[in-house]
Figure 1 (cartoon, helix red, strand yellow):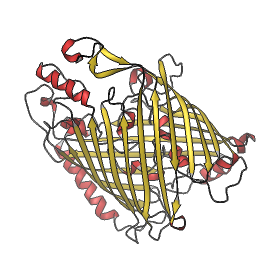
Figure 2 (figure 1 turned 60 degrees about the vertical axis):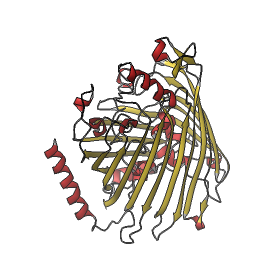
Figure 3 (figure 1 turned 30 degrees about the vertical axis):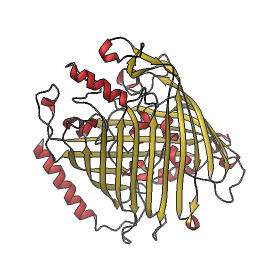
Figure 4 (figure 1 turned 120 degrees about the vertical axis):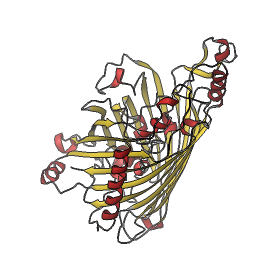
Length: 482
């Protein structure tokens, strides 16, 4: 494993040196990968002269390796088919914690590779059948590999985000839904199999990074496993309105399906019978999207909350108000729980190229402290694209996340430890807080190809201060075939 790790890091370094001198001709950035299409629609304000005519918004068409005449012909007729691959490698350059406690003996210094191939199909039924404003969207993925963070004891934040949730099958359905867009984009109504967190608490900017505390969505927003995030989906209904050019409000209803991230229920994603529905979640989000600097400095400021109707267990008390770990009685049940978020990004400097500039991101997710594992997560990031004039589509990116474990979980694990009993959450020590840092440089190699060497650093892996900090080197690659 170590020889494989050294070889892979050597290849990454060589690729970095050779690619940095390549002059790109077309714009391909990680903001425009398969899966980002729903969030791109959310973060696109109306134009100053937006018409009121009902029509289908333009589909996402990332730059591919080569211009495909068939794709051009199909898109002109309302059929948008995309195919890509994202691969993520990470290898530890620090040794793991050693000890005699059960679980420690399995920790090792190693490397891993994970990834996915994805297919997206968008159909414009206005062009195909004259149904003005109506479109359907479908994504399927196949995932492979594993993630390195578990080798040093972390189960909170994947070192490779493209791990898990894909069912370990050739084809896993992510979402499949229809959307009607009315009044020139001022009203959009969608229903079908949907990934809630692709529309709510979402941003296409998050996957400029690889680690799972940031990429996809800040991990705290799916703390309960009841909020469906890519590549999981449930039946859902969502409506979005834009009362002003730079303002939107959206809400929806999504049945909570038990086990949406587990193979026994959603291995393929094609299980539609609803027999595992145990409640409903209702999100609400308001966003302000100013475009400053004569149209060169876009920003997104969003606030949201969601309510879960499904009963959940208290993380500390039993039904009599005593610590359940000590009494061994049933945990107190809460009839509902909730989650809230505030997310902000703003481009603050613009360079010469159209989509270049320095963008700052920050935000917080705050969960119901009585039922959650992660009480809150705070993040901050910088994306600096095109600061080298001859490399307008390269970007230097830095992210930081801080996760605070709910106090009830911390206290319960303390009691488990004093009683000599096994801890929950795969923990080998009391969980309190954790931090993850990532620094990467995304290289636009050629049409449709991005290669991103990166460095990750875990402070208090698994939110445990009895585990050594871990440093990893790796890379993320993205190839857009069609």
